Length: 156
Image 1 (cartoon, helix red, strand yellow):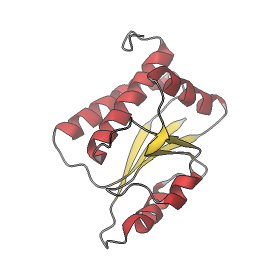
Image 2 (cartoon, one colour):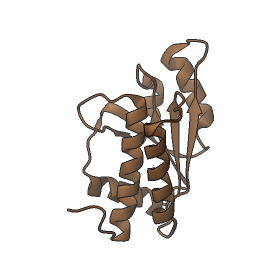
Image 3 (cartoon, one colour):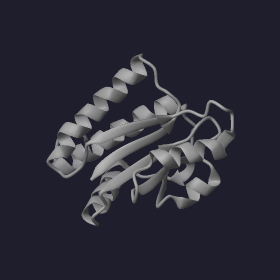
Image 4 (cartoon, one colour):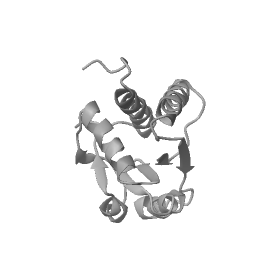
């Protein structure tokens, strides 16, 4: 199952970019034998200032056709790492070819796009800047693959 991060905004070079790239590379290596990955990142940017609706249009174009959509949203479900790994495995085992995680801009994800999501996931009750949310999601993807592979990375 291919994994896609479809995000609003560009992440420039720096510590967050280095962390993101590291965790996504780890996920690709660990997930390969599990039928997870590769992971791709699609960054969109609304240069015309159209707000959430314009961002949603750009995000929809970045989504692979038929992908299972997961909206990263502060109002979403809060899962433990093992629960998250079970969800990933469940989507894979149900035959999903693509799983797309959507991270919105400063104002979040357009409600219409959020309503299309099969899963809405929160990284906790606190609000995080999108660059850190990307890193945290990437780490959890790697952790989920590690859990499924029986690796000692996750200590239960």
